[in-house]
Image (cartoon, rainbow, N blue to C red):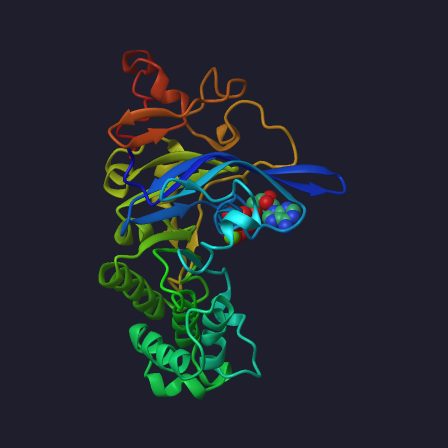
Amino acid sequence: MSEAILQVEDLHIWFDLDEGELHAVQGVSFELEPGERMGLVGESGCGKTTTILAVMGLLPANASVAGRVLFNGEDILEEGENTVAPHRWKDIAMVFQGAMNAFNPVKRIGDQIAEPMELHGTARGRQAKGRVGDLLELVGIPGSRADRYPHEFSGGMRQRAAIAMALACGPKILLADEPTTALDVMVQAQILELLVGLTEELGLALVFVTHDLPVVAQTCGRAAVMYAGRIAEEGATADLYHDARHPYTRLLFAATPDLHGKEKIISIPGSPPRLDRVITGCPFQPRCDRAFAPCPTVTPRTVSVAERHVAACHLNEVPAERLGGAGATGAR
Ligand SMILES: Nc1ncnc2c1ncn2[C@@H]1O[C@H](COP(=O)(O)OP(=O)(O)OP(=O)(O)O)[C@@H](O)[C@H]1O
Ligand SMILES: [Mg+2]
């Protein structure tokens, strides 16, 4: 029996477009234990947001889903909205990508944080007001600021308020989508510290979605590296750093900060493949400096390369002596 609080099993998501279908998530599996922090990392368009929106049951109407999402062993997508709605916000909550810019400008912050509580009936009126104050304090904002409007908060404070809002109904899992993007480097560090503190204080499990693998390595015990809708590699962040088994992971670690230190420049030549076309062979092969014979034609299987460490790269399936030093082992 797994101890996982969240299990994502062979998740596939397709978007129905006028021109055909886009296969955004192509067989993603991962597990999260209670209180664990896991990074979901990859370049823009690799399916990170789509994956976690599926866990929340919040995909748009043009999406179809296959696979399973289990919360404490229960398949929450089995009967769509009927099975996922009772868990949304109460058990699993999300800080949306760009959430700090999504507050209604003409409503007080406190009233907006109270909305999920009123909606789910977890608290009302005076009780909800008291809880808003507690939540603000929890994320490092004086409770007295609840009656302020969004424009009176700095970017970092608005992000803290967005986190408070996600925590309103006392979830056990927080899915945070790019929670530090667009914040300056000092504020980024403060938000990361807050998220780590919350997981420790509340026993909250965290899925931290970002394109920044080095930041994940500092924050999370484990990470899943996504590429073109699939998981390229997944394991303990220390193992990914010291013993990357997929060339993409190694390159993500090597990405360098720009002059302002705000964004990491992904210094990998080329770009990910289009997901509205069928991908033949390894999706990373056209950009890979270690591609060899099977890569353009044969899809790599996801194999276990060590304990709790999987990778989908042909280099892991060939005996090391035949690779002549090109093995993914010790690829850093
Ligand atoms: N509502 C939608 N309709 C059609 N295609 C979509 C929709 N949402 C996402 N996609 C496509 O699905 C793929 C995965 O997108 P997704 O937003 O999950 O990526 P991401 O990894 O979160 O990227 P980013 O880092 O830019 O946020 C992309 O090709 C994207 O264009
Ligand atoms: Mg996204």
